[in-house]
Image (cartoon, rainbow, N blue to C red; front, side, top):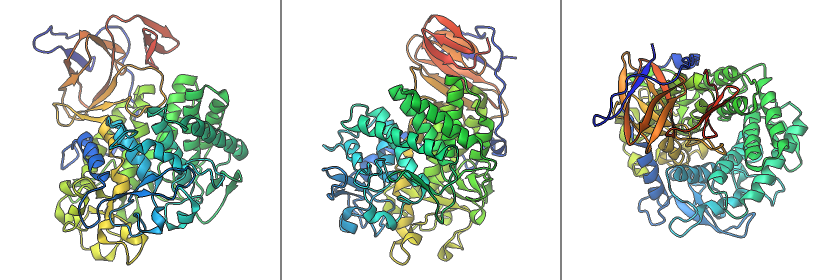
Length: 571
């Protein structure tokens, strides 16, 4: 039985049959997701797009009033480029930061780049916002004065030891470049960005050649071009970040050396005998495996990389993965962090950022549509609990002080049992943050409110849309699919319920709807909105293609008017 059919709005024709003769694409499980609830509680999906818009308006207000406000300032040190740069606090009230501390130089790319990307994804032009070009300012993180010539988490080594892993903790050095490439995709004409993007890609390519399949190091010195070991865990999942960036560079510039480097780095990742997950790069490896398999006809082991992403089985970064559990009536499943630290410790930024690669992955391999749909339902539901407005006071470390976040700054994490003695009485789940531990005795309790994590809310804001059925989300598969080929609007909808659901879906004008899961056109000549029926615990991936477009096939690929619609067509 076909699990879906589509009904045009009440003013139109009732359509009960599907078009075409393709077979249903069998869904593949992600075992960790199978452990998550079908109906997470307490249930409620917040408006992440509105939250992202509110964050941008509030966080970038130079005239904001309050004890710890404004949380934005101008750094006039002009490192790397002869221009001012705007800094954002990492956490509310962090004594290391602001214009009056450490020469105003201590701010992190994780915060400023994340906030810039997040705002951009929900439609804000950060290259011209309140008279400032926040996009152009990001060039200051390109560390040319040190000779590394890549984006780094700080602008200079003078503040490196204050925190943030600068030049000694590999993911901190790789991830700002991943963030930069995503921003570059949205602002391709920003002066200087193309040159920096090429330089970064060349650095990563040359590093991969030197590493020659062995990424078992603490970090890589991109100045001396040498792999390094220190007291920090080896981070072979840095290969995922290298591979993702190099493939984006290949899609942008067409240089086959970047494609070769992406394959080399991804092969190095896949060759690991144990789960190499360290922080947040592994999901990018899973995404790239799916995409490069689809676009370049490769055979990377996607199941292995998804298991590494979710399972919480790494040994060096013990337990890092995706949390599963119900703590005193609160489902925290779907959040990302340590599955073992004091019973589990999920982090907001990691949860937001995992959606960036994992959701668009479904475009390239729809066999994981239901698994990713179920995970995102849990993640989107649980992520509201980081925000004081949506967490009960008895489960917050500082409910009496949480108003300092002005409704847009969340706690850094949710932990089962607090790692700070003064909050050990708070019953799980405990919304808190590590800020007071960063500068013991000096950072205020309010530093548990995470500016850096909250700034990434635009990732969820661009992906997650509510429908008229509370527990069925419409996930935009194009929002964070950077440097992609031309594509038609594509959405994932998953029904977690024990019964069939009928969902209203907004569509463009005069389109045909194709579902990559059933492998069929489910409607012709639809406009405005449509009602889709989704079978119990099943999914649809709807592509809005031009009305009466010309259909062609190339190997497993199905194209409409020359644009790939289905990478795994079962015609």
